[in-house]
Image 1 (cartoon, rainbow, N blue to C red):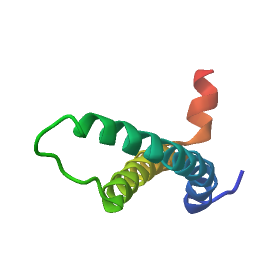
Image 2 (image 1 turned 180 degrees about the vertical axis):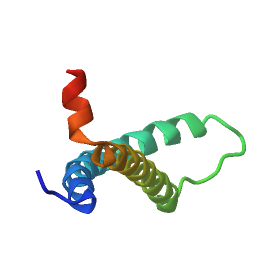
Image 3 (image 1 turned 60 degrees about the vertical axis):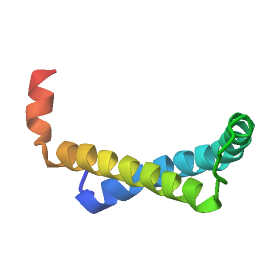
Image 4 (image 1 turned 45 degrees about the vertical axis):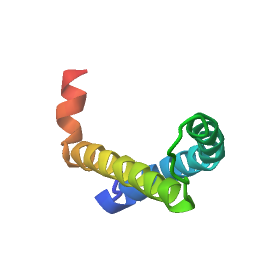
Length: 87
């Protein structure tokens, strides 16, 4: 109803980024704990740093935005008359 493609992508991505951010905040400490428990049994193990979780979270956000942007742009470009004609 007159919204630009950028407005549609922004509206959809706001909610998705909130959910991805919450899942990163909840999942990172749990993953750190279980990784520490698993690694302590090895003779040679590495320390798990905070930047590893930050990088994984950044990649998750980037993939979520890339996927959402592609789908939203594809849906916004479609002519609504064609969709209504098929239904």
